[in-house]
Amino acid sequence: MTTKSTGRAHAIGAALLLSALLAGCGLPAAGQPPAPPAATGTAATATTAAPPPVTARPTAAAVSYPADGGNRWYGAAAEAPAPGGTGRLWRYRVAVERDIRGIPVAEFAAEVTRTLNDPQGWTAGGTLRLRRVGWGQPADFTIYLVTPGTRDELCGDVPDGYTSCRNGGRVVLNVARWVKGVPRYGASLATYRKYMVNHEVGHRLGMGHERCPGRGRPAPVMQQQTLGLHGCTANALPYLDGERYAGPSGAYDDPIPPRERGRAG
Image 1 (tube, helix red, strand yellow):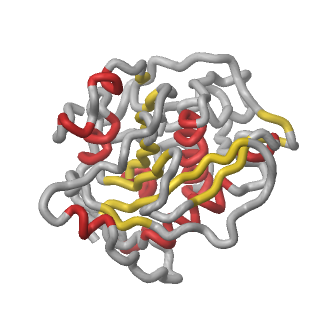
Image 2 (image 1 turned 90 degrees about the vertical axis):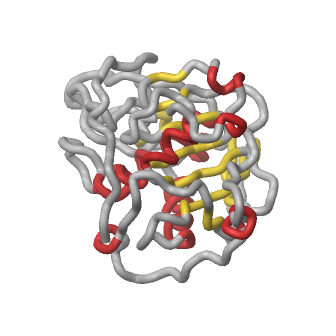
């Protein structure tokens, strides 16, 4: 989302813990992104494992995951062909935690890339480009689909197990939100998933939180729509009608729903 105690204190440095983080969704932090988190034991093997095959069925019908995963990953291949365009190139990797069943990494990566390559996405202004690279290649950030417990480890903020976040070079998407969405969102799950991706990637690109610009208007993509729309309507896109769509800077003091448990298949 929108955007804890860490299970691996060596993976999150003091500089990240001092970063300004709003509830459930990290604000942009300067500096180079951290390396992908590694688990112990068989972790190195896990991160290079071949991705599961893509299936044609809808993912949500058979998805299962524990409340706390093992912080091991399936990494996606690079997109081909890579998009063209102008502006600064941002390279990103995509990974799915191995404990999540029913969402193949290739399928998830394809949905993420479709969102980021949308004509009304972050590249619409012509000032930047986004390109998915392979798991073993250098990148400016990594998009993770994670269990609720691993969300807390990677985000390094107040642990809630519910929201998503951006922490340094980590764009962390909570699988519970990916599968279930949020109550009273007023739009399809597909729209909410696009919002998740664009909101958290927006933080990595330097965007802060925004508020609803007026009752009945679309919510800015940088509004914390996971926690409330505040009179706006759901919107997943950074650009509308060819123009960057934004609201007043700031966030709401919305409560975060209870921690998520795992989901059985």
